[in-house]
Length: 206
Image (cartoon, rainbow, N blue to C red; front, side, top):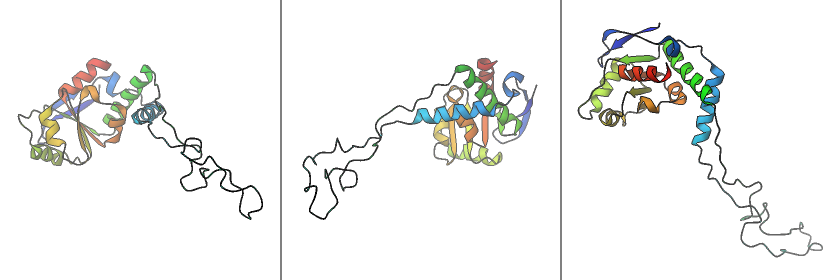
């Protein structure tokens, strides 16, 4: 079973934690992670872009000049795409970009992402992260102690004090463990996770 050091917010090791082999020492499947990330990003797209074709632009019903004899290029409508205020060729229309990924693939991708973080020494486990009131200075001090800049902080439950303490720090995101996804795990070079959050992950995926 893989072991990681257990740290306090001052980056001092206070013990060790054993991680579940099935979750944090799984086979890394890069293809599954790629497909899940592509799907997550596609599902975030609103798909509300829209433009008018020449048939939808107001006006242009009359032929601007006769077909022959003027010396000018023949034209059928002032709302043709080559005209100013004309319609758009192959105009984009509202659509859904949603992609469906099998539950089994999402599971494989999540285990692969967690395992890769452990294998690459990009995961830090905190004994606890308890704050009575928001204080950015405390979170900044913790990040400096771990030499972490772009970081994902994962808590066991939604913690408003921790969230408010970190929301103004550039490159830092706080989220409860039930909201984490493959994209966020791979996006951040460092993941700081509380011991309770690790326990919850093991409960769900074991």
